[in-house]
Image 1 (tube, rainbow, N blue to C red):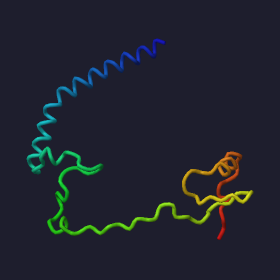
Image 2 (cartoon, rainbow, N blue to C red):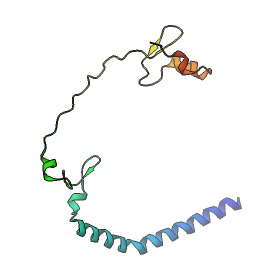
Image 3 (cartoon, rainbow, N blue to C red):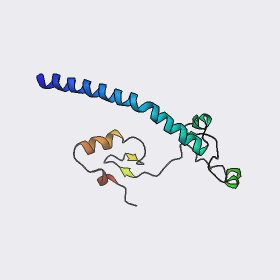
Length: 122
């Protein structure tokens, strides 16, 4: 038990040290960030997330011509489109290879049979 208690004590001391270092370096880090923002002309509004995965103004950093090009809509695939079977089980069961593995195949693989043994050869 002494080892566990010693480790917990060390963890507590290291956490305190990390917090002290963070507090000391905080203001200089903020100043560095502000200087870089000023150098690149970045505003707080640029840093606010408008869409998931995208921050700042749309087109920022792109040439004006590229920012104005119209978007070509993507052609959506029809949901639920049937796909050809890729695997066939011993009782005639089939699976396309997409989505969750069916129970019949999962049980056979759990018994040690390779999944590739059930591939449908075209």
